[in-house]
Every structure is written in structure tokens, then in C-alpha cells.
Amino acid sequence: MILSPMRFKNFVWPHNPRVYSIAYDRKIAVQKIPFGRYHLQSLGQTRRVLRGEGEFVGQGAYDAFKHLASVFYEETPGMLVHPVWAATMAWFTKLELRQIPRRDYAAYSFEFWEVVDGTGETKLSVRPGPDGGENSAAQPGESLWHVVERGDTLWELARRYEVELNQIVELNPSIRNPNLIYIGQKVRLK
Image 1: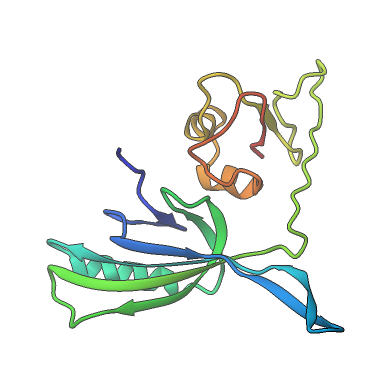
Image 2 (image 1 turned 180 degrees about the vertical axis):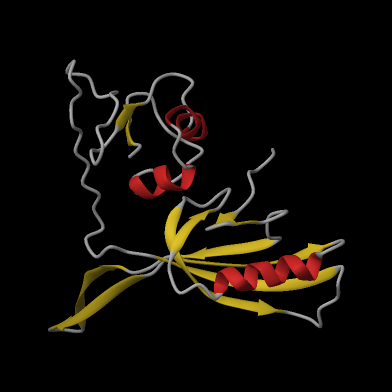
């Protein structure tokens, strides 16, 4: 099985990290009740954390690490697309060089924290086109939506409507995996 490369903002991994883990966390309150019993109450999910490690190998390996480090220094979250984990907005929270760097080899570890909007919900609205359908050209400043048909992919929609793939992913937080969309699904393009 060939997996697509991991991406964050403008950085595309030359090959996917060797090891990664995804941590989910839920806060629980414990309320004691008489006779040694207790009641558990969910206070909700918190962020998901993606941690991993890998190597850059070959000519320019340390340059690749330096480019990744320059992305780390940017003070904004960005779109993280992992070949297995769902695409999400995330903060790049940790980057570590794990050995003395060489020009042809750099081992590293990283950590990303998912951005949570506070509500945990995605509200989508579709503006019908002039013919009552939803696949219509947008006027300046208006939203543009597409209803997925057989054979559509986000990459193909980005090319067809001349928009950046990252823009489509950012406008559609309900699409957790950009490699997987469904017939009949409504996708915001602009």
C-alpha cells in the first residue's frame, strides 16, 4: 500500500516519519457518593496529539531538517495532512534533533497539537445556485459549493475550480481525511 506524504503548511516530508502515535484525551470528574461508590462525569474531549520520529537521509538531509525547523518557527497553526490520521488544523509544538547532525543524515522527533474550535461542531450551509442546484459558479465574495459525484477527489476539484487544495481542506473541517470523500457530500470550495 502506498501512502501519500505527510504535509504541514508548505513542508512536504520526502518520506513519511518512521514512527508516530496519536494520543486522545478525555477529562473525567469523579464525584463520590455514599457507601464507597462514585459517579463519573465526562468533561469532554481535549486536544489530540500526534507525536512521531523519523530520519532525513541522503544528500541534503540536514537542509531538509532546517527547512522543517523554519516551518516550526512560524507562529501560526496550519493544515496538517497525515497519510493515516485525519487532516486537521494543528500547532507544531515540538521539534527535536535527536543526534549530531550530518549533511546526509538527521534523526528528529516532532509533536503536533490539534486545534479545537471550542464547540466541536461543524456547521455547514449551502447556498443554492441560480438553477436551484448547489454546483454553481461563485460571485465575487460569495461561497462556492460542490456536491461530490462518482470519481471526484479533492485534488481533482482543486484543479477544476482553480483553488489550492489546502484552502479546500481548511474550508471543510468536517472532512477529516482529504483522501476520502463521499458521493453526495457537500464540499465548500471558496
